[in-house]
Length: 611
Image 1: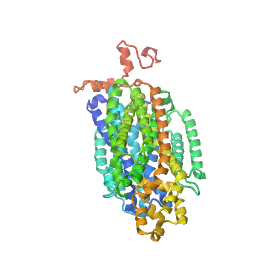
Image 2 (image 1 turned 135 degrees about the horizontal axis):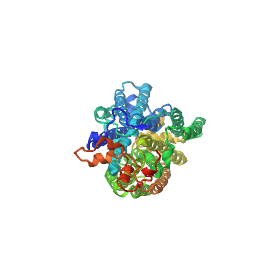
Image 3 (image 1 turned 30 degrees about the vertical axis):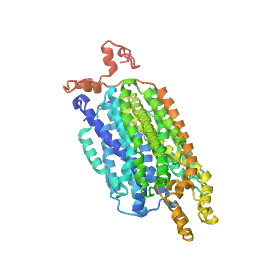
Image 4 (image 1 turned 60 degrees about the horizontal axis):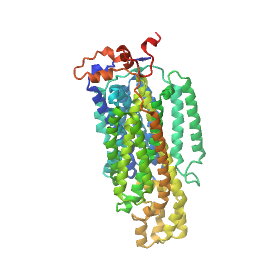
């Protein structure tokens, strides 16, 4: 039953400035959540060095993968459940709880005092808890804003919020690159003051203004969804690790069992949801055209964008920066700095496209954004591996503009299409698609790159090593290194040649040792094999962008769903605050009919309704 809960306030009671308070706090929450989703990526070399763990050892690969992807896996699995809880018990209440959990976990991560395996498991465990807090924030921020802002300002509000959500993932690279070399604890400590301020601010100022949908929790749906999605995402995580004689783990029986079992459990989940009166995944929402096509577009955009971040970091850290005079220890910081143009492009386009979508609709902007993004991916396939940075920077700016043009209108169209009592669940469903697509994208991109490396890297490594004095037997043994280890070395900015050759280096002349362990040999060695996988990965991203563009066009320019008009009334009342609180529950359709104009939102006129 939809109703206002005890302690809830109407927008008229909160005043015309409340919507800006909601926007400021949710933007801060999403910003620190998404910064923390990527800040670890750049900081991983310093983190592992600080806790005394070698991430390239086969027994430690799981630490590397779970520190990279644990946060994303947890948010993907839990965000829809937490959105549903927001619909049931209050979106602001669930959002505030998320801020609190996120802050506590940041303190625990920054306080890490142990070393070795114990430190690695401590970090992974608290990253999972941090992901739980992030899921609460992500699931409810869009719904809070949609409740607080009138329909003609939602594009702007969700656009600003979307800037924080995506720009944060790029800003995290820079922040991590700056702080980690100084002290890796600071990577987690930087979130603490913002988390404390944001949590106190949220508890004092945010209020539940939306309609609560009181209902029983769908435990069957929650359990089957969590089990099925976790199985698939864990299988993807371990699928990119080598298995016996294979370069990847896709033939591992446990990986196959998790993939197939996860799909079957998710099929069972759908069957449960079709019979459930209060489902976790409200499948009826997919009858809304703008919601369905908008989520398909967002899913495909996330598939194309998610792995891109990793690929560009590998490209810069493992190849381009060492070839241009940067030491391997410096590459994490400079990779983040050299990625800034993409953030600039996004920051320029996302707010503007949000404002424009309020006036002209989402279809043209979202479609055009995906077309532009796809064209930049095509341009990157032409770019040589050892590129001119000015050209690379221009492509990053244009790519960011395309993503910004798509993101804000897409998000506004999806959220505005939802009825008021389903915004938390709908936002959670949308965030689930995006977060799951990010993890899936990482698995796909890594697999494509590893496939390219595996085809040509062994022969390239054997030839390169023997040309510089390494015996054929030793070179052949080193060339059997799994391609994923080379990929991770490039991603972490490590030069693995010294570790791989070990005692063999003592048998070589000093000049050959200096060259083999210097800045140019390893990057030049993997340039050709890496380029093969890179082109395949970019073509996959192009295909994803094309599908996203088509879905955006098919979604059309949907009108907002019928909803309470308290937001519009509060927004237009100005500072006078003269709007009666009892008008908050009147729908826009009722006002139009009462005024003598026919309803235009597809609902029956009042005279035709039963009762």
